[in-house]
Length: 331
Ligand code: SF4
Image 1 (cartoon, rainbow, N blue to C red):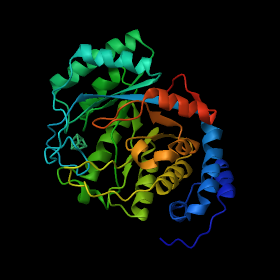
Image 2: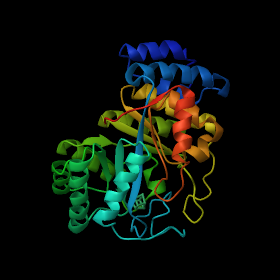
Image 3: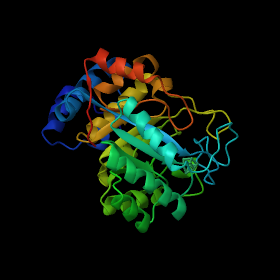
């Protein structure tokens, strides 16, 4: 792939709205555009975002339902057995705690409650416990449920789907070519397999990336196109918050302009999909985080799995300052 293309971003956005599928060369040109083009790129991404999502912003809240003690060795993760980090370690939360989290999600104006657990895959007992809580949340609130519990068997995927789980998240994280550099205990293809099982089960698939894992711009483009080919509904774009004690603790090479160009690239490549500014938003976009919402249409409100987000009031204020509105909730 070469980057000789100098793009007319606004024209390209118009073409995308008329059905043009971005090429990898065009996607790479967006990522590698000079910083002085940033406003033009965001303006153009906003035309696409506005067409499909207006000025609505979807809010999601995470609960870390099982923390630490994970036997996998994902190099970015503070919950891995190989990480020397002081994260809380606890087994799967009980039903009352998961239900209390649902009330907190409502208080934070989140429409989607994301129940996330560390570990390679859930045990039958863990899955049944989470399902019990999910059924009650679905019966008693209007929250949508997104589960993220690791690899899924067909049986587990069907059980979650039947219990009323609306969405299942399983990130690809990085490109196939870069995968072995961030993890040795499972493969990129294992992750694709679970996303495929989610789709087959009838749950809405969610799969995204973590930017800053040592990937090249070409590799970031490749994973954006892989996600497109999986036709997932929702794409979290995380920005590595490198944590001391993790194997990737020295990976601190992102800047806010790069991150924004990447979010815009994801919007151009996946124009109709929910694009979510995710973990590492505050620390990597810093004073420019509001600008990310010109390309993305979704954020997490509150804390992440093991790191803090900003106060919900700051997120609500940011949305209001932009003249945008919180989406009442739909997936
Ligand atoms: S990302 Fe998930 S699978 Fe990987 S180490 Fe962390 S908790 Fe385990």
